[in-house]
Length: 171
Image 1: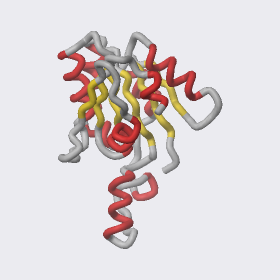
Image 2: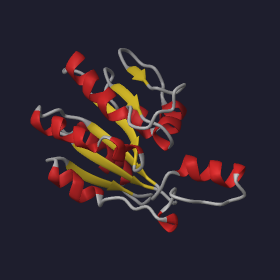
Image 3: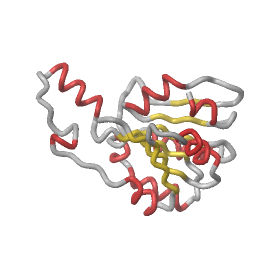
């Protein structure tokens, strides 16, 4: 709900899969000229970032927000170079739950909790997103459930440059 409250009236919000998709659909409220798009029915990982970049080139005056995840961003993080090269003021949320939570849920529900390749404890890892932000010239804001997180969120959304807002979640 905080994203809705703080996002610009002309915000374009693109989602990826998993927590980005679920959070987007859960919090989104239409207001004025906001637009929301997703690949919900297809469920392909990696849609959010190029979708947000495309939205910028269609309407560079709008605030561009991408709701992504630690897993899905791995599918096309090279596109962050485009964000840097074209100075796109993207607000990139990465919901970091240290794994592929939706895949892990499916493995638990359908395969008797035989978990493989869906969490750090089952053999995968992720980069330090603060270093990734630095590499691509983005400000990094790690959000945790602690006092002052709404002020940090507001600071990130109101920034004129690209910002990677890492939402630290319980795996």
